Image 1 (cartoon, rainbow, N blue to C red):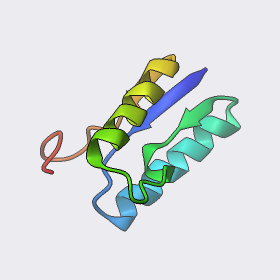
Image 2: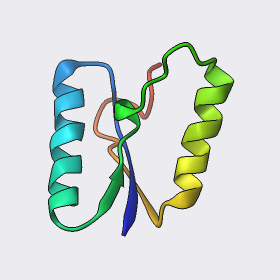
Image 3: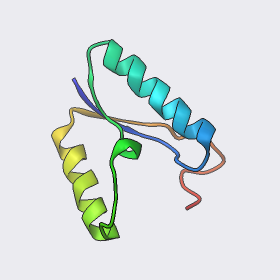
Length: 74
């Protein structure tokens, strides 16, 4: 199954949690897209948004870690 794994990106702990979860899902046989592993380089925000939306469209399911005081403080 192709999985888009969305989660918070604000702290090292959040990034590590996302990576560990992605690794576990991959080891279970899933194809995981983890946005934090995509290099934004010099791309503009609209270009990044388009590539992430395309990735979502190509996935079978989205797993969103909504653990925190609100969905997105940023």
